[in-house]
Length: 276
Image 1 (spheres, helix red, strand yellow):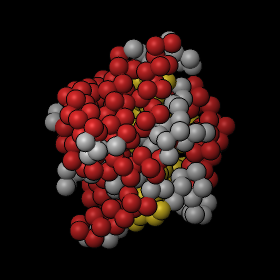
Image 2 (cartoon, rainbow, N blue to C red):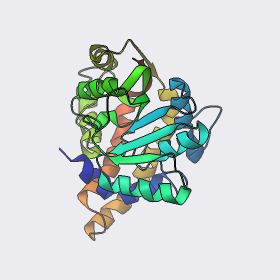
Image 3 (cartoon, rainbow, N blue to C red):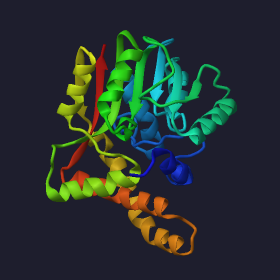
Image 4 (cartoon, helix red, strand yellow):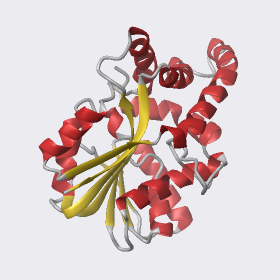
């Protein structure tokens, strides 16, 4: 199984040059609706959709569990006047976040190298736990829900944007496509809606509202598929000459398989909020 740190170290350049830009450091898909119909806008719009779902208010402390390059933290501080703390187990990502914090002079945003399954924060430290396409990397999702519950104040919310299995198992072809997508992305497996709900309720959450938002994200999923399909032949040449390694080339192949698995009906994109 590919290590998460290794994956993000080797694909850092690709995310920066292919998917985002200097002002938008998103390491996630875009959310298309009446607020956004272009790639860069849709990436930011994912933040708006999640923030609206969680009802984030000015001054609330938000933990971005798996913050990537800090995109959501900067957005929440600027647009919701929240007090975000971003964590990642990838030291290079936190270093990038701190450089960006200095560039933007984002004094209310904090970043810490930490594992979201075992954080250094005290009980009831946050009003909101935020996880955008990061929970998938946990082998045992129930550990994440337990830690999120511990960290939330009474009445706090956990908001997710995540990949969900359609069933366990799906078709044989679906399982093959899932494996071909997930493993090169350092994702052990993804859970079903029922499994996520069970994890949340067992951890102590009082309610679990999860909705399928695939129609809002499909354009972004398809865009990555098309982009990587076009780039794959060039990537093979680059690999032959030693310009890219297996991790980066397999990342491209996996990005193609994610959309094929979606078309097979093996998974869907969901957004949810869980209340303590």
